[in-house]
Image (cartoon, rainbow, N blue to C red):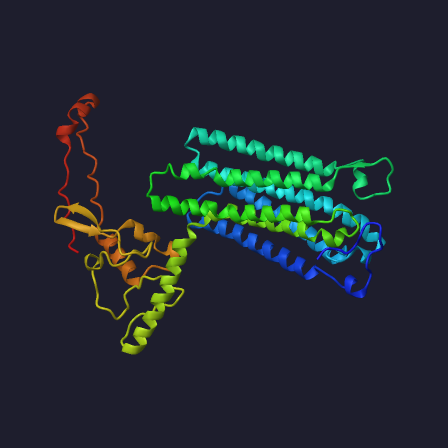
Length: 432
């Protein structure tokens, strides 16, 4: 609801008018979107860890954008708690007028910085994914230059919207010149919407050039185009610029829409920039759901049958090691039953070793890292079998150095060395 103030008339100071407050809506919106964008950035770093990828510039810049967004949210909460933001201006105390006007400038600067950092992070993500195509790299460079120029223009326009600068919060200065705030805000908002659309459509041609199926291309395009809701928030913010009463007669109450939607738009843009990196969460989530489903089914089956066995808890992986009371199985019999690294049905085959007694098998070396994924020690049966094989199958010892008579000259010793070398008989390989 807008203020009932009318130019040239006194405002309505009735108790119902002064009791109007947008403070609960400000707290709910700012805190909610701040928590959501924080979760999005945290999931982005978690996905990078899941795929064991090295963090690059796009990750660190999105983290910097998150810090700027926290600053923007903190300023809005400070305005709400101490500077009468969300209430009518008639309730302001004299000492609150100048700090509130200064915080309005700070919120604009933080909003423009957050938007620029998010755009640069998105361009670096595109560069990391599709930098093979040279024309696309040139397009990324041009888009980055446009983003930087947009930030410089909006930053300096905000700082110097009044000359001298102090006139932005001190209206008593004489001979001060200020821009029309509505026009400046509209120019920045519309240009930002155009850049959002450009960055949204930029990777689509590269996705359809990939040598994958059309289904995968469509899914990837959908993930990248989820940022369309950022453009929707930009449109809503532009509408709030039109709807705001810029007469400065009740700015603490009327500026609610543009300030809150600035925070919402920045957080939505940050979430959209993190969505393409969250694809590893899909198989991880499916694995967790399958693990819990199979573990609950295993518990039910064990309780109903009454037989001895191993029940998998929800925290255990979805591959079951054999119970201690289960019949003993050799490595050949258990091949293809477990994958101790990935939990699938494709265990690594035994490694053949050639010896004089025939072909024997040793335990695969990659099984040694079985505890890296689930943080569990190896199964005692598998560990004992590997130890047994390592102790029984030993490499053949090297033959001793050949011996020569002392009377043989050095040159003749080298020339006659092949005929003088003697090797002992190789030891027999122990049976397993």
